Length: 154
Image (cartoon, rainbow, N blue to C red; front, top):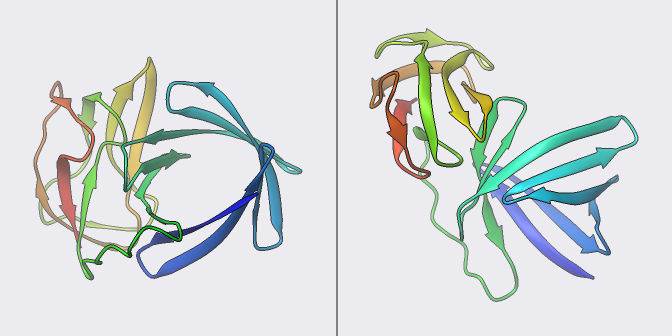
């Protein structure tokens, strides 16, 4: 059994891992490896496919939302946070299918900002919160790599 701490922005979770089972707070679920960077998460309410990309501070893609997590074990120091703004990046190598917003656009949490295609799947990138798109750094047809900002969101 091992324990890791996960952080995204101001939210933190402690996860216990043992024999393919993960427990976060009172929630417990099973994680199955499906393919390179792709996992099936099974709960009592159903299942979801989750894509994970990148070492160190991995990107996790679930239901159209991409988030970069800070993972901390006993040996890993805490990484510094950048409050206020977010660079939204691709969770994996992908092609930009459509950019749905322009710089200066006000958006609501969950609005689709752009759509990527990776591994023959469409991956909508949604706004993580209400805010304003400060800059767009990609266009339809662009090939993008993980970790490279696609747009700046504040």
